Amino acid sequence: MTALTGALTLALILAGSAAQRMAGLGFALLVAPFMTLVLGAHEGVLLVNLLGVLSSVLILPRVWRSIDWSMFRWLGSFAVIGAVLGAWLGQRFSPAVMSVTVGAIVIVALGASLVLQNARFTTEPRGPRAAAGFISGLTNALAGVGGPAVSAYAVLTRWPQTSFAATLQPYFILVGATSAISKLLMDPSGIPEAAWWFWGLVVMTVLCGIAAGERLLRVVTPTQVRRFVILLAFVGAGASLVRGVWDLLG
Image (tube, rainbow, N blue to C red; front, side):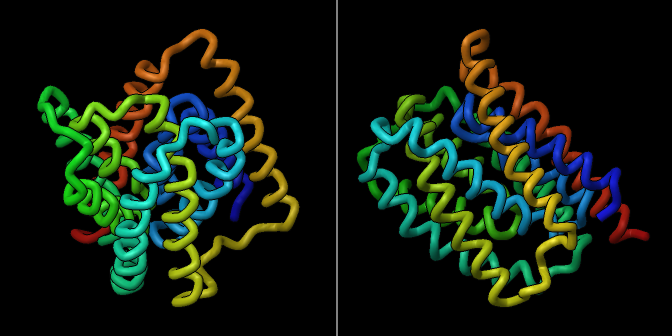
């Protein structure tokens, strides 16, 4: 990993951690598309999985009382199935195909949630929960982004923001860990090579991002943060998609 690549990686992690603390999601949405450009598809997605787990672990104590454990169990159980399947499929795709996949998944999922945000559904049926969890686990393993599927579900069902943001933290820990462990078992060399002190900087950067997010919550609303994250995610996804198509055609 070069000095420039390391600096860009840390900057992305800082922004993603701050967004995660403010809006409950955003780490993977913000980081994954750009990380695939900086590190490559396979290594970038695996690193996003690992850092997403770390970010949620550090945030979890702050939101524990607001977690909806019933929703977590339903989403999480089916997400594990999707994550294992996605990890297996991801090992069989070329980096160019993975870049296209990352970009397309983010654009389609976010676009669908925005188009359908005025529709009204209830959280009571368990089938949609299972489907959202499975798709989220699959896309998390394939593209490093499990948020769009559950975010779309939350928008459509009017899931309260406080409970939604809190429940996503143990959910992302479970899904991210399942995706990362599955990938490492299939390919132990998938973690980007870097000096030991760099990983120490990564942990410090996540902590700084969470602290910055808590301070920013005093001047901005979660809705404003989510809109900003979605905008950046669209830009990053578009760049990842273009790069993948360019590599495929080249």
